[in-house]
Image 1 (cartoon, rainbow, N blue to C red):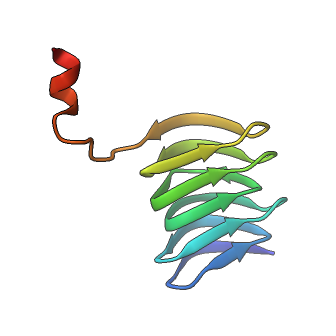
Image 2: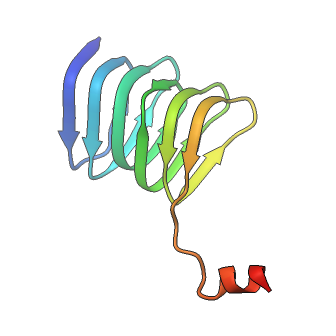
Length: 107
């Protein structure tokens, strides 16, 4: 099955087929093994077992599991890339640093 367009919602979703477009969830997304997403993702959390081509933004965590393939810009406070996965792109972990940390480095 292929879904084209925008997938939005506030409940957890598991994709086992193909999505082309965008996914915006106020919940968790699971990209199952064999699933293909050519989409930009904006979710709370995502577990990737399949293939994602596009930018991924998560408010919590992005986990790229063994056998998964990801290409794009990945943004989250926590990013987990497991051995055996494939990643091509950039990471952006814009998280607040403890107060004074940058001052300590310069001394």
